[in-house]
Length: 199
Image (cartoon, rainbow, N blue to C red; front, side):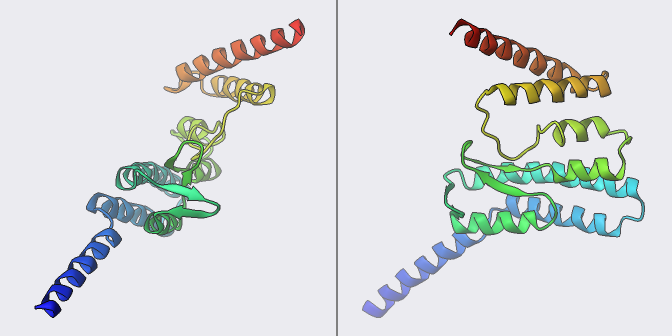
């Protein structure tokens, strides 16, 4: 009887460990989509085809990061170690397909970076999605992690990036947001400069 009880406890423990080790189906499917896009990039024969697939890969990476947040809502980071370890392994596997997936300490969540958008611009700088690639890549709106402090230097950079974007892509669907961010940054910068004068 004692042997049976111990066997039952061991089986339950093993089952629990196995369940934790296997990621949710949605996360597995998302990881598979990343792999599929990476394979398409490898098979692509033209720069345009590669560029479009890099864009699709970055889209899938953003979705994967969202799935990571749902699957591991209590993730944390200590040095270069992310807890739980299985989450870090999945992120490393996802990253191997071309777009970095990592845990952002300031935001306390998982995020996807913007390598795919930069690749798009490298391969097809005047492509039909160049505005999205620029907005998410060089302008930095798909950077996986950031710690905005509102310094003069940061505000000046935001102003410069958004002014350049509006000039380059005046009819982009991102232009209204760029104008709003530009106006907000200019206002904050003016307030800071006035505050320094009043001292």
